[in-house]
Amino acid sequence: MENIEPVNSEILIRDAIFDDLEAIGNIDAQISGARKPDYWNETFEFYSTHKENDFFFVAMNGDEVVGFIVGEIRAWEFGSSPCGWVFAIGIKVDQRLHKVGTSLLETLCERFKQAGVEKVRTMVNRADREIMAFFRSQGLMAGPYQELEKDLI
Image (tube, rainbow, N blue to C red; front, top):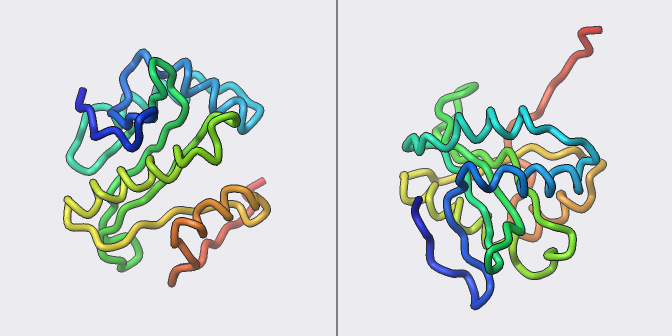
């Protein structure tokens, strides 16, 4: 487990460990309204191998997990250059507005930069104004790609 520099006197960002999964699942359930223990176990198993391009961090306030972020470097999809992708972020409701999300995203972006990546991307639901506002406040904006989908049922 690698500890990362404290972001302030209260919050420390570090690699996620197996013992964090219950807290991560609780934060996600608080946000989404659904418990997904199998999903988080599988996600941890995949991303905790510390592959060079995969990242799973938690924010700690003392002994308490107060947030998490998961991302990876993906290369060459649809002709794009390698870039960092944020595909999961969650902050305990009572810890929002304390820069926990900002600290997690900055840590992830720093790792992306260290790997030579020049862009970070994510995908959000347009109706989720809170997460949209967060990412926009961090400097993310519409990119050159458009998501397309089709109902299969």
